[in-house]
Length: 176
Image 1 (tube, one colour):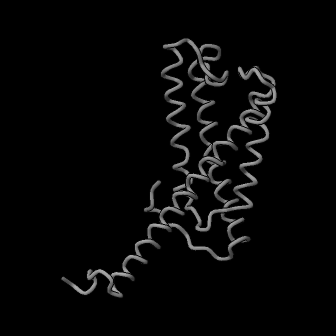
Image 2 (cartoon, rainbow, N blue to C red):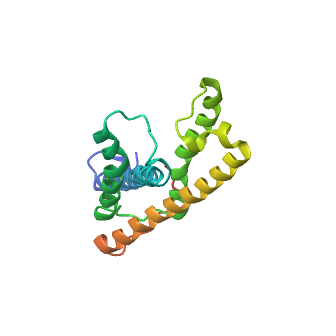
Image 3 (tube, rainbow, N blue to C red):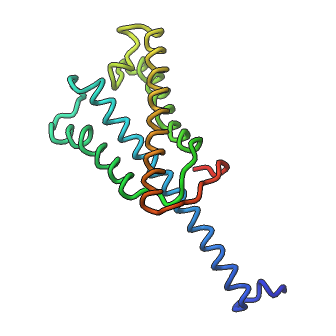
């Protein structure tokens, strides 16, 4: 048995501490990425609601719930992201992976819509304006969402520099 693996040896203690530190860093990186994605989703919710849905019945019966979900919580989560930024910076490429969930949801909605004859949002409804107009609208939304992802990440980076000083950058090979 090697000295490094003998229980109770200084090597074994150092190896356990190193592993805990490595795993804690990974957990912290994943938590920052998850917080960033949730912040992005709420920012998207707030902006889409303000720009495209504010004067449309979105099917929420209680006005208080409608205001909290679509107006207040996007601002709260954005302030949370700025006031308590991730300790480690998140790469631009990783922040763009946050768009996978909206992409999958959009595809699911477009497949399910004709089957159940219902679309959750008027801007996803192809029957009124046709599929070419829908495609153009989706390209515009995709570009806007990508810019929002980069902006949310940039705000987190700036706030992290302000709060934590110089922080290390996350490697692009790390995945969520």
